[in-house]
Length: 353
Image 1: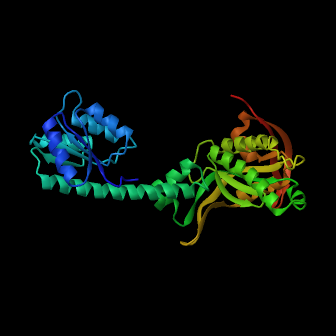
Image 2: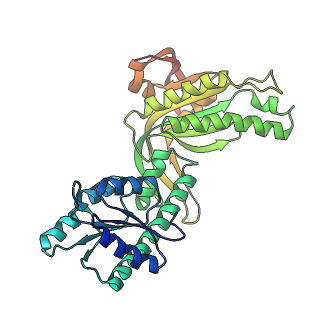
Image 3: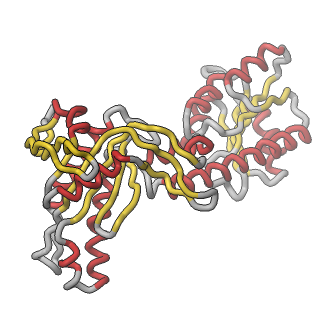
């Protein structure tokens, strides 16, 4: 957030120059802090909100060019406006300042009106940058309800690509999960208690899916769908999905409810890997980023066949990670529309590296 009264840092090893800058800026109702060398200036920038830096070029120890380069190298201050003050008129010095990241230049001795005009202009630009960043943070927070933080940042960085309607063929791993025996259990509880239990369960689901860089597609009562590999491929998406499933099954074993000591949450999970269409489906007013295709349907059918606490994966997923897992070969699972069935494996554990 920008300061109510903009704070300007004046950096110069000449005390008289600092006094002139302080008087001119103070009369214009700016808050002014000063530093007489580069290291002190960087400490002040790091320790508190500074809205603009007036930076002398020629200083002993650390030049203004070096200070500016360090400001630009820091993600937290890379957009901080920097005006370089110089008595050097050679164009090569301005070129060096631009290369270091300076936004503007003032020639000593400076003109008061020119100083204030340039400061006002750069502060206005900074306010626009701050406003955009605030909106980007809000957008990342909203998108982050559906995807991991890393994916949310990628979407915000290139919204034209990731938020447009349409789809593209992607190789992903799809995970479906569903609580076993929850419906009859929920029928004997108050609606508020059911919602509380579901929120505990889904809280762990969300945490683990995001931890393993997956994306939550939807909730269906006590069931959920997640996918790994879109909009960003991780290179080990099948492994991430299976590790997520195993972590969730382990987490559910530890969940207890003081008011309902007999309740245990047991999930059946089905996983499949393959080519799908991934993209935004809907309209300009309302869209869902999702994946569609036969491979998604197959993952859902495997989930429907998974028993309590079981993680069933297809042969397509197994072939990608077979060196990392211990499984029980279940042979071919009969699936509607596939005469020969699909190889199914019950994942027992992830092998420690």
